[in-house]
Image (cartoon, rainbow, N blue to C red; front, side, top):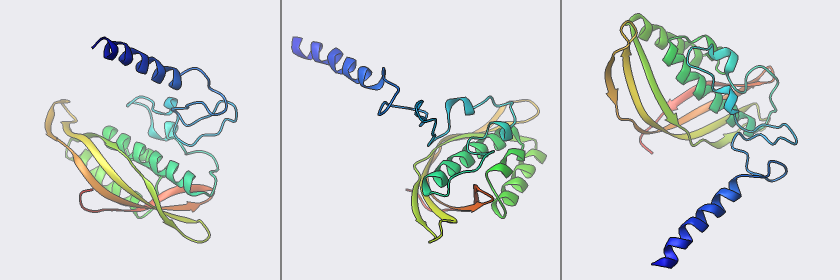
Length: 196
C-alpha cells in the first residue's frame, strides 16, 4: 500500500516535467507554434478572442497567404469551425467570408439570418477530429473527413438572454471540401452523415 502512495506522486511529477520546461526544438507546444521558427500548425490561444469581438479580426488562418499543403487545409478547416461557432453565437456571419466560400457561405449566412429574424441565438461547442481523406493532384482541393462531437447546444432568446432549450449533443460524420483560391484555403461544401 505504501508503494502505491509513493508511485502516484512520482508519476504525476514525471508527466508534469515532460510537459513543461523547454520550449525550443522538440518541446511540447500546445498552440502548435515553435518559438524558434515562428511556424504555426494550429490556431494560437490569443486567437480565441471574446464573444463580443468581430470574428473577422480574430479568425486564425485568415489574413495572409497560406501554404498549398493538406496540413494548411486542415488548419483552415479548424479556423472555419471556430468562425462558424462564433457566427451563431453572435448572429453575425460577417467573419465567415474569410474562411468560407459559396455555396456553403450563402447557405450558412441565410441560416444565421433566419435564426436572427426569429429572435434566437444558438450556442454550442464542437470537438473536432479531422483527417485528410484525399486531394486533387494539383493540391487545389482537399477533402477532409471529420467526426464532429457536439458537447452541447443551447438555444437562447436574443431579447431576454433566457435559455429556451438545450440539446445534449452527439457525434456526426462530416465531410468538408476545402479549396485553395487566391493563396487561401476556404471551405466550399460540407456534408453531414450518420453517427461516428
